[in-house]
Amino acid sequence: MAGRLTARAFLDAVLDPGSWVSWDAPIRFRAEAAREYREALARARSETGEDEAVITGQGRIGGHPVALIVSEFGFLGGSIGVDAADRVEAAIRRATHERLPLLAAPASGGTRMQEGTLAFVQMVRITAAIVDHKEWGVPYLVYARHPTTGGVFASWASLGHVTIGEPGALLGFLGPGVYQALHGVAFPPGIQRAENLLRHGLIDDVVAPDALAAHLAGILDILATPACASSASEPHGRLLPDAAPMRPVGDAWDSVQRTREPGRFGLESLIAKAATGFVPLLGTVVDARHSGLVVALARLGGMSCVIVGQERDSQREHTPLGPDELRAARRGFRLAGELSLPLITVIDTPGAILSAEAEEGGLGAEIARCLADLLASPAPLVSLLLGEGTGGGALALLPADRVLATEHAWLAPLPPEGASAITHHGDTSFAATSANAQGITAWDLRDAGIVDAIIPDDPDHDRFAATLAAALADQAAPASAVAPHERIALRPRRYGHSR
Image (cartoon, rainbow, N blue to C red; front, side, top):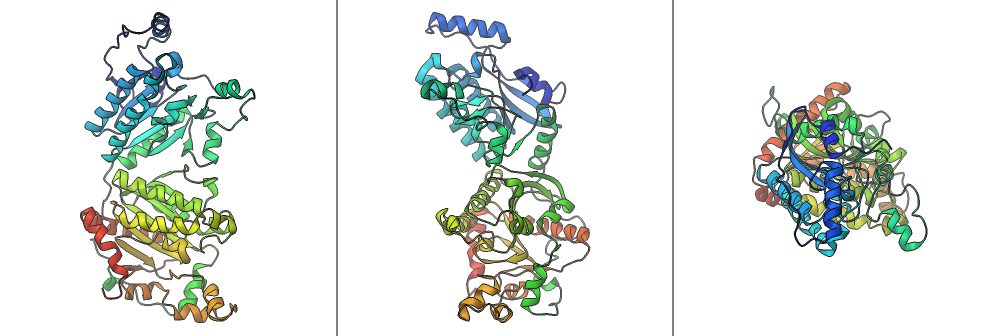
């Protein structure tokens, strides 16, 4: 990889010119420190021009104010002792108090060996400060630089709402040199590189330092703007049931076939045509770039939100929904709650994968946990039934404060062929009969009170995307105005027969 940036060079690379303000008070040598350690500290200060292994302060990125904690690896390998921990914790607490997004840019071998166990346990109080910061709904971003290992990696470097890696960076718990010294063999090459962590769904992206400012600005554009902004051209409720389109000609089986047509409008089109800001969070599942599940920060219809949605074509072509994808969905649910952003779930799935591996991976349990997480989420929830809604994979994203459906969308416990097989002793040829008998269409769901509004299909995909985005924002706004405990109490009531 290219030469390592110093802490000051990193600031120059990411901050708006002239915006840096240091928060650091001078650090004095501890009188009780051993002579050799004091000499090492003195050399580190002379060589780096810094008085500790971290610097903290405030600046702007793309015009957005942000607090920063930046490691100086040249200072004793960026290691964290008691004094450095004091500085890190103080910066986190100040950022929380001032409600500033916090960017941590660690480059560290871990805790400082010269201070032993006392340095090691400092990771606990730094973690506690990060937890408090996130509980206040203030963004915490991490840019893991080369190298980030040990106790730093296993604490504050791994707790970001969004985590980005430096290209080629060594990121991992146990340093490869330590591993070789302890085990007598080299650590397998490439395992701890940022790119491999991205492939395995452990970080969200890999971005070069010279592109980082623009990337961070895009994230802050989403997180620092109002969560909900209703359509300026139309009032809330314009898609309530009394304004819904006429029931279409055709039966449930016709809708099923329409949603399976190649080239039908899907989540990818909605994002590409209507999202004015979009940051995919790839630290969710293995090979997330080809996953059938999307977790992202976005601006949609003038609204900042978290999107957790199903991309139908990717499920068919690459990765059917399995337990890993549902665990990723739950990360998106948590993120919306932590950041106090509306959560938009988009349902369009031929169904979760049916396999021995999925059963052993806990597929059923993950569906249950998705339901439980959504029902208990403090975030405003809007669900969009976009197309196919097959089985537990669809149900896992359904509970919400408002539920929208497109004209031909449907929801069923099994694909109609599966229902036919159950009711007709293995014969799937009664799929159309099963579809028509089970009350699966958007219209049936609206009549049952499960769906709040139906949006007519539109062959003009640009216009359809804009309509859907505006509808989602329009319905999130009133949900956001209700207290979280009231939203949570109301969510399950729409499914009661005697509502």
